[in-house]
Image (cartoon, rainbow, N blue to C red):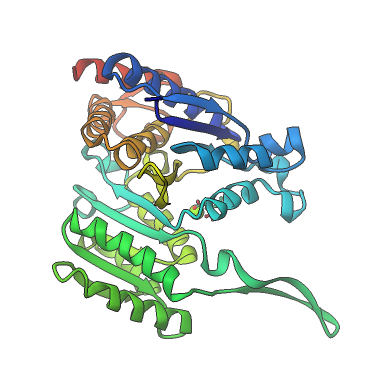
Length: 367
Ligand code: IPM
Ligand code: MG
């Protein structure tokens, strides 16, 4: 049987640097755990635009459809700010999500003990925090039609459309209920049913799906209240399910609770492929961070932890995923810190690649 395949798309900015560390980790699993992967690499975002004049070449799109998992670094940067909307780096990412039909975006926000002091909230509010946001990723206002900037009388009007079909809501909700079943069996659905019809439908469909999951305690919150509750008392949540735009915002908010955006991984999952694995792309929640690019300051943890999610959700290697997560946790507990985490408590300052090496050392120690 051939090895499972991974397509690496480092993208722009620190995407390159953090992905280099993930490559070391992938190699480690091949050497030490007999988990070899066929790894290929390609361009996305500004890097793809520079070479091909498009943020995602059709050949790259086709490759992404064939592999068992895509690992993406980050896209975007000031150099591309003035590009036409249709070829902006972000369009490459959105095309991957849409054409691979990656409807369930899993964004865990976990607070590592060693980092509880870095949170903008009081330590007791976040220590032990472990929530999972499930963001619908292929529909809603990100993709709804009509969209555009139109002439209307003597002025222009900008239009985007929030649109959800029942089946789109249902499959995202089901993914969230399934996750809740494997966790603390609590699910909170967030929308704005008080002002949006799509929110009313969202709530109705979630309630309908909940009948298949009687063990899960379901609650509903307006998304604005949800944002407030996330910073007031985040530990009340286990799994949160929400639409594409609210999920974008709420997940950044939840991410910051954990101390650093440099720590947070994500998985975007679609329907099962013929081999039973879900269509999948894994990426850190952080962006391309042009301000620190090329300085060895980037924290590779989010990208490394995204590979851990790949081990768990694509390759059925939950124990190895835990091994990797524990290794990252150990490195942090030992006070090893990239620049984003060098605040009050001192610790040992390391570069991006030294952080990767420290994770490898912790993995070696785990054997
Ligand atoms: C994210 C990002 C993207 C989004 C951008 C880069 C298009 O903010 O993944 O959260 O808005 O979905
Ligand atoms: Mg975002």
